[in-house]
Structures are given as structure tokens and as C-alpha cells.
Amino acid sequence: MIDFHRLKSWHFDEVVQRYTVDDTMRYALALGLGRDPTDAKQLRFVNDVPAAPLALPTMAVVLGFPGSWMQDPATGIDFAQIVHGEEQVVWHRPLPPAGTVRARHRVTHIVDKGPGRGATIRYDKTLHDADSDVLLATVTHTTFARGNGGFATAAVPGDAAAPPPVPVPAGAPDLTLDIPTLPQQALLYRQCGDRNPLHADPATARAAGFERPILHGLCTWGIAAHALLAQCADSEPARLRSLYARFSAPVFPGETLRLELFGDGVERRFRVRAVQRDRVVLDHGHALFSA
Image (tube, rainbow, N blue to C red; front, side, top):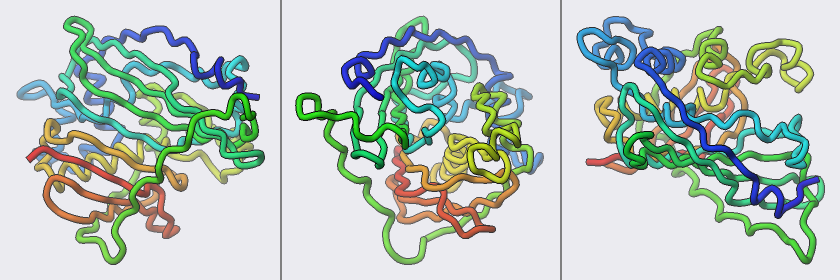
């Protein structure tokens, strides 16, 4: 069972990570960029000729990874029952194509949804340039711990729930875009750091209730982000200022994703649907761009 005060004050060591242009290109390839090897705008992220590649802004989610800290029994978290709930990033500076970063993590909110209803655990990461300590990005990661509801007491009630996210507008989207994923997409994405066997081992996936390994939620999120960047900001990574979405269903590698985009200008709403199953997999999406 979760001990609220212990988990709220969980200690994280600062993570220092050096990354290279190879890592930057590998991340972009893992999201499917380069599918059209003649697309000059995609090639800017996956090719180091004639100049260094651009870094996709969403690479901030894989840099400074703290490891599977929720697997530590001392957290009180039922690790087998956790799922990724929400992800938000705010960018303060463009990511360089190579460098060294420092990542600092802290648990910020723990909400008890009640016995049998689970709990949500939010932890933040600030990503800094290692030399200057300039803040590059703030990442907010929310986990839904399905097996941990009911820990709160009258003396220690836990944190208040956040307001619900704003839904996408009703009616037909202003633009739709279909994006195929590769059957081996999860095997590519796990090279970026998340080696959870749920995404690679069929037996582990079946034990978790899935017919086969599922795609990393952050891979789906990154694919959507690149599509948004291409459609709304002419593939200029510095123009993406913040991105949020809620994970609502898993994706199986090889499925086609449909981005449904609402609005125009610098603020957009979106969701993502798995076409073959007609299932919304990312919802309540919000993206903010600079002009």
C-alpha cells in the first residue's frame, strides 16, 4: 500500500546523460520519420548530411530517464497494475542535436480515487543543459496505479484531484491525417531507453492481458507530435511550445493512427484514433505553437 508521505518525498538521484547526433536520429527513426526517404523535411531529423540533424522536441521525454523506479517495493505501488495516464511537456528552449543534460525528478501529486478505483501519481522532470543549467523542458508524467486505491485516511487524505482536461470540440475535425506504424515499431522505440518487456515479449504481453506486445504510449504520443509539427508549424521544432494528451487505449504495432485535428492558429486540439479498431488511443490533446 502507498505511504503518502514516503512516496511524496521519494528521493531521485540527478540523472546526467550525454547524447549524440546518432541518438537524435535514432529517436526520430523510432517514431517512423524517414518513411519517405525523399521528404526533405523529414530528412532534416534523420540525416546528418549536409548538416547536423534537428532534434525532435519530444525527445525530451526519453532524455534523463529515471529508470523503473515505481518497481521498487518501497514505493508501495502495485507495479503490475500501472498504466501511463497522461503526458505533458513545456519547452523553454529548443533541444540541441547533441549535448549533455541534467534531469531532476520529483513526485508532485498523489491522488486516491478510492478503494477499487486506483490512484494517480504525477511526477515532474526538469531537463537542464548540463553546462549552463539553462532549463530546456519541463515534463509532467502521470501514472494510473490501478491497484492502489484506498490508501487515504482522514488524517492523510492525499492530494486533491486536478480539474478534468478540456475535451476536444464536438463535431467533425478540421483535418485528419492517417499515419501507418510499423510491425516492428515497438522494437525500434525501445532502443530509446524504455525496455519494458510488455513492448517486446509476447509472453509478457499475454500475461498482462494483451494478445501481443503493445506500442509504447510515448511512441504514439511522439508520432502524433511530429504530425502536429508538420501540419501546424512547417516542421520547425522550435515552434512547439507545449503538448498534452491523455492515454485512453493501447496501440498495437502495425496499426494505422488517425490524427484528428481541431482549430487553427497557434492553439490546436486533437485526438488520435487506431483506425482498424476505431478506438481513440490519445484524447483531450492540446498543442501550443509560437507564431
